[in-house]
Length: 367
Image 1 (tube, rainbow, N blue to C red):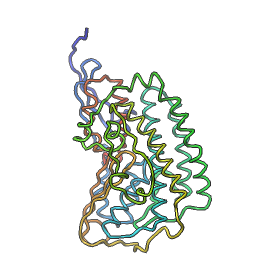
Image 2 (cartoon, helix red, strand yellow; image 1 turned 180 degrees about the vertical axis):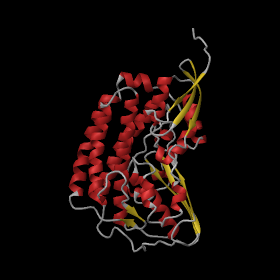
Image 3 (cartoon, rainbow, N blue to C red; image 1 turned 90 degrees about the vertical axis):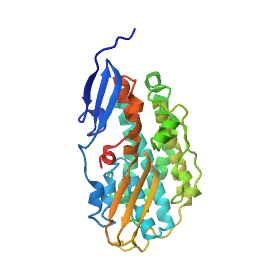
Image 4 (cartoon, rainbow, N blue to C red; image 1 turned 60 degrees about the horizontal axis):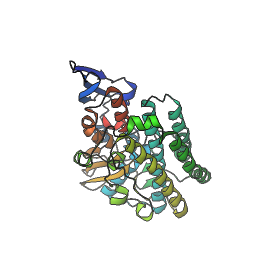
């Protein structure tokens, strides 16, 4: 028989390792059961959107790297596409293919981080996380070939890319794509049918389709709830309309489905990259856009399907070399709107795993 106890409120974070950075959860417990949750952030506030108003359109690219720092390529892509839409800038076909390759490599790397840390929060200290980081490092090696950086990349520019891929990039990419499906098989062999993982994640932290849609949740969290919405299909950009791939969905909307959808998305990313390697044409990788971009007066919103969901930039131009206003629709921030609904009723140990399955990065939450 359950014994009701006096509620107690405790802080998790902002230094707690399971709060994914400087994030605080003010949690009220009845025993070990969560009865209320209040997310608190503001410890990392960078003023990114305000900083953007004081920089040129090209300089802002470096700010986007530091939003979701596990998916810098995706941030670059979302931002430069908004500038191109605002300024009517064309992008060469070769650059579009390279952008898609980079975005899908970044999706795989980001999902490795998500899965590795979720397993860490299940209590599997170190080893599974290092397995995920091992293959992620091979992707970062490819990014280093492209631009000389591994994390904060700044590879994309309005109108294209800073430089073409070197000759040795393509054999290295081919080798990685050849071995990646086997590695994903190994990861699934360790995790997908693991009885501890199943016991701790199945039917835990459920998000119903209605709650996900009403909370504006996007990305793997939305698709895990059975809603098949992916901007690469719904509103194709770059060359995604030329590529064949499936959009994986879950059925329960629980922590396990969120893991499984990310694994399946990595497989689809491999399919996309392999098609891009075969289809990519020669030619320029940068249009004749001026260094000091001066879009006409107006505003624009453009979004992509980033690893964590819909990442969009709203830009307002007054005709100058800097945006008059910049507003970011960050998926990590929006996806937290359902966090309380996911946590109430579960126990302290479940709280850590459920929160880990949301895959948030505080750089874009507290931007």
